[in-house]
Length: 117
Image (cartoon, rainbow, N blue to C red):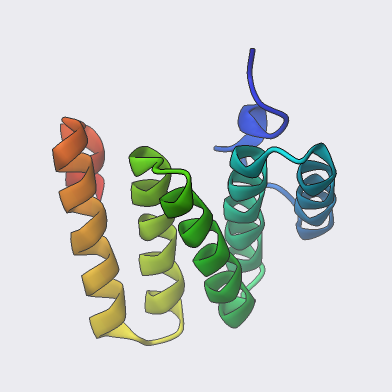
């Protein structure tokens, strides 16, 4: 069965809706759902140009994925870190995050996502 937020993970979500999903995920007590909701909220922040907020939110998601030992979640979060850093003009940090994401996807055997990173 899909998680609380999994079904919208790849769709653009308005900022308010993403924040509501994060609140719901926190109430559920499921750390994986919370990490996914944080990632969605970070992407929503990016979509509206809130680059600093995106960076802060995705940093929390990245930490959660690492605590959960979720390598795929970590790699996906690293792609969003790269996008947020790039949007903030932090090219070196963006490149480092993209390289880390590519490496993680390579370790997972996901060549398509490795190429996207």
